[in-house]
Length: 276
Image (tube, rainbow, N blue to C red; front, side):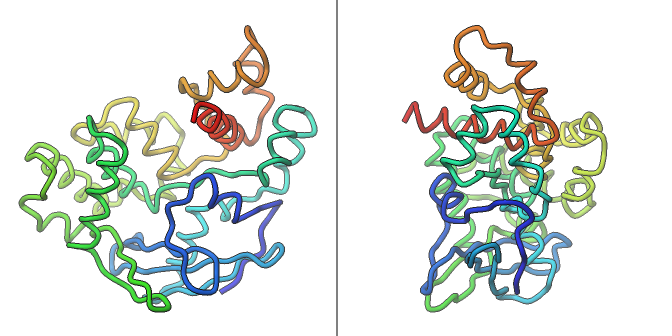
């Protein structure tokens, strides 16, 4: 399969900042996930040749290709993204230095919700290890050029699990609620993107164990919204670092329209790198 990027895009830069993907023989990246609609899982390889994103779907279904593009924010039109950098020299400099970095999302809002529930009160590495183990033990596996990759368990499979090593009973109950919401369509990516932001946040907050912070993370990092507003501590600290102490964060963020979320992720990523 092949897609032409709308606007500048650098898969290598995306991988450098957000990585964690398996790298198959022949280059590029591979990701595996339950396909929304929940009839099957798939693995998708992606590589870049100039402005073309090329790849292959293991497990069938064009929907899997579209979902993989959404993970990389390649389903959105980024042709106007450089114009923000032309207006804002700070953003322009960071865009050029880092390949016009775009957000990388979770494979679906369903997986985002599961990740935040599993990871609550755990170190990031612990949460990732538990999710990887769940994928190996309960998800579908795929052979990609001799490399085994595993998809996180689909909602139906998750509901079958009475217990999960490393996760307490309350978290398992919360995961079952997420699985039911996914099967009911309440966590559908297109639905959460299309609805007014407040409505999408309210829908996600109905999940057991999901408060305001997790709801925003699930909608913004799971569904993805190009022009949503975020005011997390890391982004605000990044604004102060790059624009100077006392900078008017509200006015700066307004100037990032209609790519406020993308610019926020760019600033956030640079702040995390500076701290590291």
